[in-house]
Length: 481
Image (cartoon, rainbow, N blue to C red):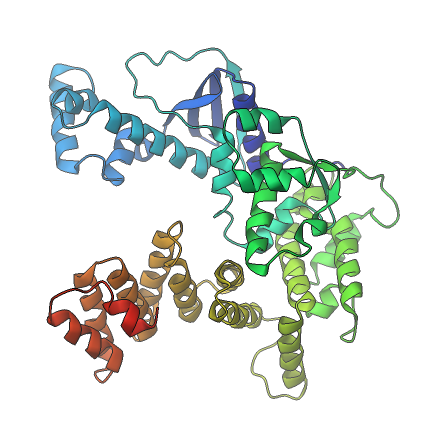
């Protein structure tokens, strides 16, 4: 069974290679009737557009605050009566400078490319040549640097990152593409240090030896980005099929049937007194048969969606059993269930989500925020309407400038799902206070008091806000941050 490429990997490699080759031309991305166009000029993305009205540049400028909706509508009316386009009218009227427009196009290219990288399917083609962009607004985006930054946040689940990298014992090495990326200034010191360790083929686990826990996610995501862009490549992945690696449709379906029917030990085919080495070996062996990359082409590719879900479940089992703290908690829960004391079945995804929530909280309390976010992301993927998970993840992400808006969204969603869950309002109040949005912080505290009139923290915040004066340190003091 040959290994095919996911749309994300195909597109990432294509734009990175066009950048490294300093190519000029037009990249067309298609998904059904949806079409997005990206224009390269000497390896730099300078222009993008979409055939969807709501995705076009003027709408992006309005949504992102580059132009006021009223001003844009007025400019459209002028353009319609006089000819030309609304942006030209705004530029002529000095409402937008050339610098504003270039920065807005940079933002727009990033937005469309990031959205296209998230397509679960799609077709891509590149035509060499120089696009006629005379009179068009243009920007400048170096693709390799963008993709390496993009993967720091997407996919949000670390399990998905691990699955997309490949088998857990994958061997990787750096490529000739590194030199051009260095010339373009796409790599920082941390990238170069990691690539230095990969000048000779190395197994992925070797990169994590003696590495602090809070650095692991960054390294995983950097490796993933480098595989996407061709800075790293797998070595020896195309091993010949043997009895140990060959999988028939019947065997694949038998493995898939275990999802939701077996506990973490059962999904790996292990007894509950197994050793850590046996857990790792079982996971590696199962990856050789059932990793999603093996189903991207060939006669079993119709099973890819189910295999992707199954292997995420397998990876969660491995992460739980390979971590001594998580394994001890999991074993305790299994013992309670066996004694008839636990309300949830061990195969219930809500149960697995709860374990991820518990571990995420523990890590956050130790200030291992990056790793905590990974467990909380996993919990949310398994139980996406759980207000407790939404609140914990939202609180954590609002501390991260790159994911601050996402964290706020989770907290708002939690408060909408259960208006009586006051922890989400308090988390929003703390976030708004830290970001000097004091009126909104006060409003959140009032919502808390609607449900808990005696809530001491909400009452204190409102009282202190009512006094006026300096508020910068108020929320750090009251919320212990």
